[in-house]
Length: 93
Image (cartoon, rainbow, N blue to C red):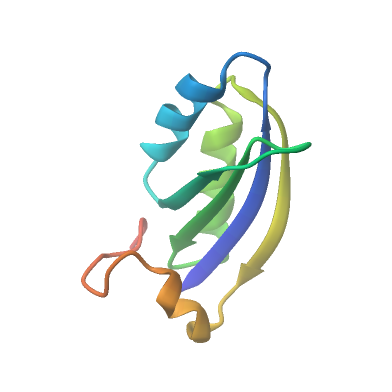
């Protein structure tokens, strides 16, 4: 299991539609609106590192994103508590 955390800066005036679009992407587990330079803090999970990269690429292709800044990508099973539920499957198998 791989977890990815990233900061995302959205184009002005597109926060609501970007939130809805990003939230619906498979592998996005949690999205938080934040104040400051970035618009959202995002938590993703997948089976492999390249799958997290695919999620980031899909977010980038939405047309709402100005910048994506990865914060952490880890295979640490100690982060399993970040999952929404124990029965939930990762985005990619």
